[in-house]
Amino acid sequence: MQTSSWAALWAQPFFFRFWSARLVGVLSNQMLMLALSWHVYDITSSAWDLGLVGLFQFLPALLMTLPAGHVADRLHRGKIFACCLLVQVVVSGVLLMATQEHWATRELMFALSVVLGITRAFQMPAQQAITPLLVPSGLLQSAVAVSTSGMQAAIIGGPALGGVLYASSPLTVYAVCCGLSLLAGLQTLRVKIHHQPTHTAASWRTVLAGVAFVWERKVLLGAMALDLFAVLLGGATALLPIYARDILHIGPEGLGLLRAAPAVGALAMSLVIARYPLQRQVGKRLLWAVAVFGAATVVFGVSENFWLSLVALIVTGAADNISVVTRLTLVQLETPDDMRGRVAAVNTIFIGASNQLGEFESGTTAAWWGPVGSVVIGGLGTMAVALWWLKLFPDLAKRDRMSHG
Image (cartoon, rainbow, N blue to C red; front, side):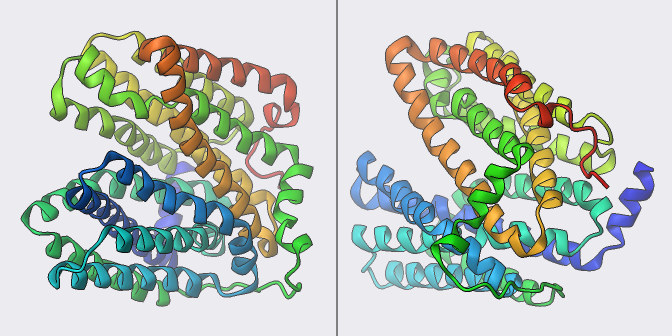
């Protein structure tokens, strides 16, 4: 069954055409984000300004995501995604000219960060809602896993390639980003997407309809909230520099390996799920995956051995990928097409909030209890949440198959 599903997925040409566009787009975006941050630091030598780059991207994305979800339900999602890539072409082109003509300033970088944040708000709901339109529902879990594997590969390779190109010249990396984003946009326009847009008028009620939809369906609410709390409590990424320098004594080279380790685990697991999709007891397996994520976080927290720490982080990435693929598949299968953009927007807010607040939580608790205490308590808290969810969201825990059908 699994092998036939794998072969059937490869027979979906428009899915892989869109997959390749997303892969190239994410690769370009990761390179651009790294170059933009590095360029700001080169100009100002200020850690505060470096933090503002992230803030100026996050806040507009947070404010615009729900309206963007409604737009993704009203307009053609493929064209929205292509337009977002076109904006990245423009941003990369502006940075290329500004660098070449020596008018790249701190203020320009902040303004472009805001543009990228708004663009992300429109891109995420649109791209999440496209995949279910390209494959049969029975192949959706494998499709989500394959999509995740490509994104993880781009997340691993993008910053590394961007760093190499930036070292040669900022002009090079901006030119390459410009070309890759244009290529991804053109590839997206070649994808045939059969989307029937909703014709409901824009209002606060329709914009917030995704929130109401998720709130009324406890399986979706439980899956999204579980991911939020797992990342919020179990995220040790923000403290990796402390572990690398003061606990594991491995230097910047080792830090790079630690940062890549979760993505390596996620990539490996996504390939496994693509070949062998979860068939039964998906709710319990989701909760077990989060519990394993918490346990591996605890192991990383107490470890003073580099290789054990590396393995622990790989396990966190693999376990988190099970959670991500399961959650995204459930969300897509439980949501009617005319609501997928708005529900994807709610999911995007959960993801963004958990990542940003998780870094803040890790830094705050590390200041109180030290880095080891912060990571260990966070991991134990994640395991406790997985146990608590058995009682709080019984419908999620009892969910047997991805689809009721």
